[in-house]
Length: 231
Image (cartoon, rainbow, N blue to C red; front, side, top):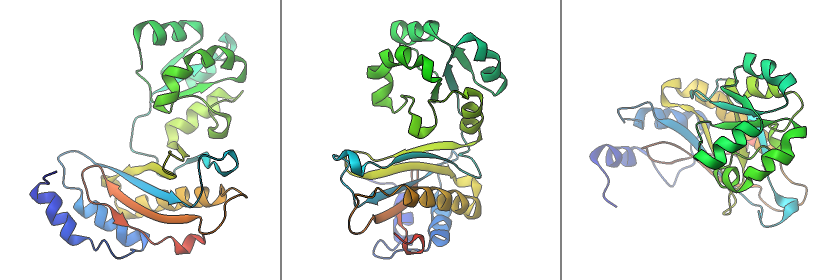
């Protein structure tokens, strides 16, 4: 794959053999985000667990103090008595069977987060094959299956993100936009890392956090030292 001049210049600015302090790493990421749009900054955290085992799963959600910089569209499945509360909290779409039909029959997917009250999960379960592969299936651990749908909507709008292991035991999470600057990004990064460390499974043995890299959408990955998180 051929890379452009901006990417190659960024590559020269990063020492891939060094583990940077998080503030320095995120400063580098911001300086190297040279695209014509506001690039998303992501953290990629490799864990010393085996996601094939149920007792070594790492999954949860955390509200980033400075949000994600993204306008999150929320779809809520609940009974009619909660419609108004969900809409007042900022949900773009609220409903029940009508939304299930729209998704299954029209392949409608104009939302980023799905929230459901527990009494609607029988209905939402029918959408497993559609929502599951996209990482949109509501889950109690992520706080998206809850009787208090309004609170879940408010948190999603405020910058709540879900973190979970992929098949290669890596967590991929957005932590904001390059325009945030290193200070706000570091606050978000620290909040995410502390949540991931707190979620360490008791069955995990050896080094928990194997490595961590931060990068922007079009930028170069910068290795981050995680020793201060004590994992």
